[in-house]
Image (cartoon, rainbow, N blue to C red; front, side, top):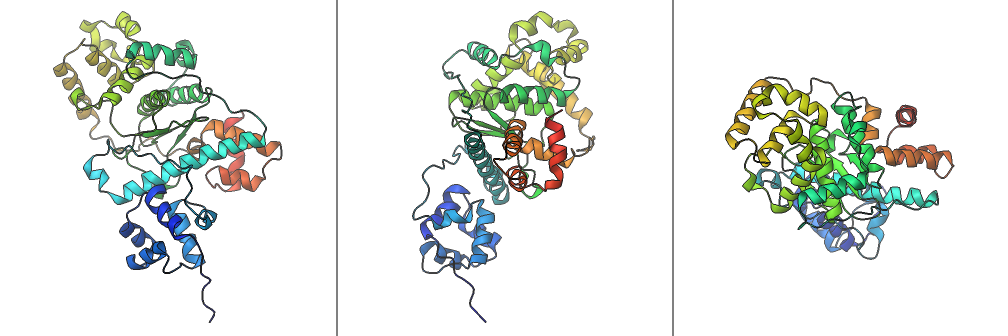
Length: 390
């Protein structure tokens, strides 16, 4: 029987892909690859070589194209997100969740690179994000800059009939400014829990990327979206899993508190809120106020707390009542979104539009179009097309 063909890859690149690209501990990688850890160590040291079949498994696990492993040295243009300070210990030690998070980060980097390539194929200049703020700025001043940058008109937002339409409005508003907005992987084996990540961003330009977790509520995703936008205009690529509902404000990192403050002012401007609110009628008025701003009542209460208009005790009482009301409601009662919608949300609407445009102009084939849209089956393309070109 002929021996299996050996893959004469560069050991240094193999080790780089595990340690720097996908950030896996060697014992976990060996377990997922179903090989002895000493064998994987030998492949990385260059004393042995994997077979080509084994390399294909490695490439899939490491989210790295096979050709990369044949480079003479590791690439220098991949900058992984290194800010893990927000991950609690129970997550930082969960290797499966860390792998899924890193796989999603790699997918986001690859999607950004592909978008740049599509623009080059179409011979169009990339959109420029012409805004930057400083973390030492007053949050209200920074929020004003963000609002002006987005050219946001509340009257347009108020046409949204439900939270999902409000989320779509904000995604389209942000993407119109040259920022790719997408969701974590459509592949269920790469889904991540909310306590692992609510969202993350890649601040590189052109085409910074914001990724939100679809397991969050629509209003939760809106807050994360604007929070991550603030990180981008600060020039920071970060992983975010802190909850804007965090009761103890002193627990927040100063940068996270700043981004929360700016996002809150963008979504619910202080002056506009205080003109509407009547603290004596707050409980009765809360639904009307939250509907006006198209945010959850929780955001309104949180905003009033940070503005010093209600006490910590008032806020905690509201939260306790809210948690008691919803603790017995089964998760996921709304049902899963249609698969083609999940594909579209994972890629981002702007990305999908550009990909279809490249296909229409015969710059890419139909198979390539399906490939860049999360490796979808071509049978889903018609529904995706109908969803974005209506």
